[in-house]
Structures are given as C-alpha cells and as structure tokens.
Amino acid sequence: MFRQLFRRDVVQNHIATMTVQELKTQLDARAPMVLIDVRQPEEFAYDGHVSGARLLPLPVLASRLNELPKDQPIVCICRSGNRSQVACEMLQRHGFTNVTNVVGGMVAWQRAGYPVSRQH
Image (cartoon, rainbow, N blue to C red; front, side, top):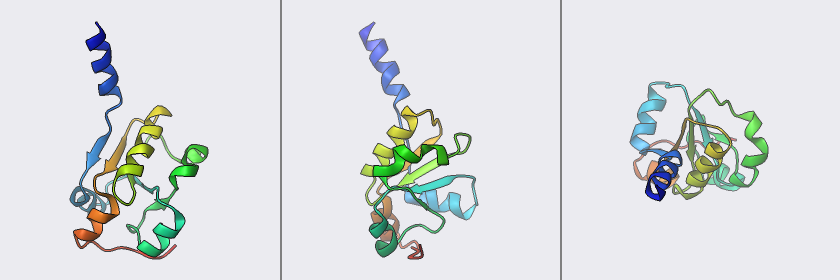
C-alpha cells in the first residue's frame, strides 16, 4: 500500500524535461509555448537569453503566476537547469499541468552555439 501511494506521488511530481536541441527545434518550428527565464534580471540582460524568453525571476514567480496561461505549454530555463526545475515544481503545485524544464539551461544553450539575445 505505501509503495503504491509513494509511486503515485512520484509520478504526479514528475517534471518533463527537454534538451536545448529540442527547445531550438520547437522554437524554429514556432511551436506554441511560453518560454520563461527564471534567472535574475542582470543574468538575463548581460549574460544573454533565448530570444522570445520572458523574464520572471524565481523569487517573484509565485507572486506573478496569474500572468501565465494554464492552457499553454510552459518551458522554464535558467543558467544550468536547477532554478528552472524549482520553478517547474512550483508551477505544478499551482495547477499548471504542461511544464517542462530545459536541461542544462543557458550554459548548454550557449555551449551548443545557439544565438543569445541581450535586448531587454
């Protein structure tokens, strides 16, 4: 019984992931999604970000959930994938069902040679 309850909980809390290559492919195909960058404003501006990403720093995300659509896929990215994982978990706890974490974050994006924007 305990094992079944635990397994169900693990499945419920599973966060989908995608690679930067998969993200690039989806962006190039103009797949519907809301791309959220959860880093700090300085990182977003000076280190660069994926074009089209919306800045919602992790510390303020909980207070701005009402700005996000629950009926569209939400993809979260950060520097390395850790903060975006936390963001995905938070979104799930607040009823967002289609959330994905970008594995490796901006480090992997830049390492792959993909373009970054430095516009605000």
